[in-house]
Image (cartoon, rainbow, N blue to C red; front, side):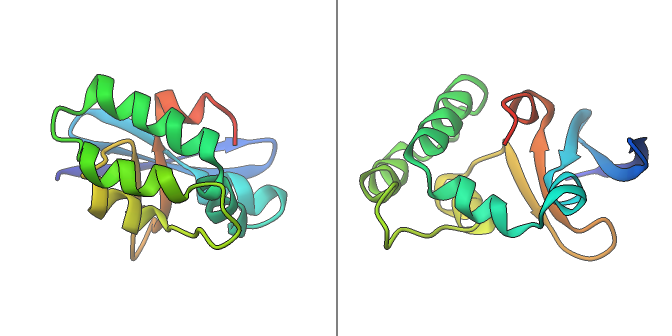
Length: 119
């Protein structure tokens, strides 16, 4: 996975954009920090509609998406006890639309298509 980084400023807030294999991913973490905090990403992923949206995107763009594991996640999504991180989502389903990155420019990044859905 080859990545390059850049920063953009939107309404006085710096937001990181990484380019992964020629595709732009925008930092959801930076966007949410400017608003209310990164914990909203985990709440967003708990929502059944979010999980279904992400699976549709993955089915279109990711031939290696793990449908079997997705079905397990889908059956639990929306329940009060359901909780999944971006890292878990990516590892379990082989997802490519969301990236959890550590270190400098670390955080949660979404493919530019997914970012358009507005968390």
